[in-house]
Amino acid sequence: MASVLGEKERKKIVFPSKNELSEAMAKYTANLSAKFCKERGYFTLVLSGGDLISWLSELLKPVYQESIEWSKWHIFWVDERVVPLDHKDSNYKLAFDGFLSKVPIPIANIYAIDQDCAALGDAKGAALLYEKCIKRLVNRNIIRTYKSSGFPQFDLQLLGMGPDGHMASLFPGHYQIKEKANLVTYITDSPKPPPKRITFTLPVINCTSYNLMAVCDEAQADAVAKVFEDNFDLPSTWLTADVEAIWFLDQAAASKIPKGH
Ligand SMILES: O=C1O[C@H](COP(=O)(O)O)[C@@H](O)[C@H](O)[C@H]1O
Image (cartoon, rainbow, N blue to C red):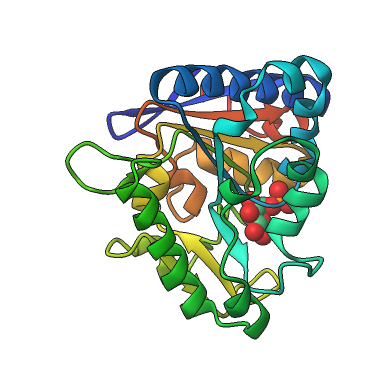
């Protein structure tokens, strides 16, 4: 059943296990890739870090390797830790090692944060430069804009949620969730290490055409239940999308959602 967020719906699908979830996420991504590549010659995909990247490995199977138009993909990060790009905590490194290096996406279409800011730990500079990068790609029509607002509109965003209900690097009780003026903001005291991060702001996250939030395991079950009870103290409860916001859950993550939600 869908729960309601203003006039928008929050949908969910509960899968028996991570395997089924990961298969469905690959199918969902491949279908949207085909749709957007056909409609406009590009597919803009926003990744997060965390467990999600290992579930993306389903896309490495021959059926997808051979059918996806990889050269039309453009890759972004909804949030990034401000650490050198070869650091174990880097979301870029996680995605590159586990997925991006194994598919033929042109390297020029993979938009990591500025490497100097990353090496220096300059979160503010990294946020400013990532925002500039997004605006440049809007001007080149690689990223669409949302209706008349001028906000960037990505095709698909794949998100994860922490046990505290954070999404991207928008954490409960931190002011970044309220930021509306900028496309990209930063945090220097993240409650989850590492402390310095950049993140898309909520308006950018919610302008995305399709938002898929994938959550597995019992550790997240309390937070998932709070989201489906519309507890807006959790940043993830604010997630919507232009076309569809859908939660892919395994049974453990969904186990505490009250009946009827
Ligand atoms: O720190 C982060 O955490 C979230 C959630 O990660 P998970 O390991 O609980 O799936 C992730 O979505 C975000 O990109 C990352 O920077």
